[in-house]
Image (cartoon, rainbow, N blue to C red; front, side):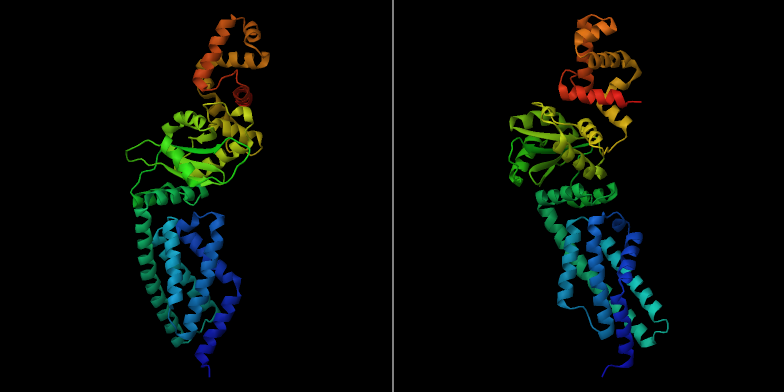
Length: 392
């Protein structure tokens, strides 16, 4: 026959498990009090809620039955710890999240049973201390083992790191630095994020070997700075030193590939860089892909602007495209560019500016040298035209 104290605990348990606000309170507290969890994107919160709901049910059951964590519980905790090690969430932050959850659990029980019997209160305290001690030991051990495995398999660890950067799971440079330090690597900064795909009508999912082959062709051998490659559908995604962008066009052209290289974003914005590059490849017209040249930050931002979802303000896009042409000392080159675009030919532009045609062509060559954009190329002329139109 169920004793009165156990019956009281069971009543509280049923009430809390049935109330979705309890799990919401736990998730909210963890999100607010543990910085690593505050930085998680929305795609990870369902997992946090699921773990909170499971933990709530198990801890309340242990309180009601005076039980202890079972082998199946320990296996699940070890699995959670291994997953957190793989995605770079520090074990200290994970354990703190459980302590925060235990505090919320205690507060919720107290709110529902303000005159909790001493025996029930002691049972709750004993259960929480024992459970937290057990899960700390199990999770710390599993986390360390997974961390060692990841560090031993460096290529896989770097690929997982790049996958997490693309997904936006590292929202701060500090968290990224901690994970890099555990792997014993130094990520390139400044970096080039290259998204590339073979030219052709068919676009099957890319094999990782193809991405790593491209990485080998572009990576700088030796040194402390590392490069990494992963795949997203039919495309290779490479994280390279910033200087590699200059060689990317020739390497891709030799392989009949095309790509977009983003070099202007910080390491905590790799997800933004990937989205810019991927969207650029989705929307760029065929004539934007000239042999020996990859799309750049400027191309990607112009395409985003044309698509109605700019990732930068118009004046910043203009500066990216025009570069030194925005300087007051280059006003004569801006006048030459404007006349050339408006008139349609070098001869006509020269007449507008009262210049010799050769002088106008010389200025066009200077524009090409300063911006890496040839005004005679249809796509690059369009980007220059958009930039000079929207500049302040």
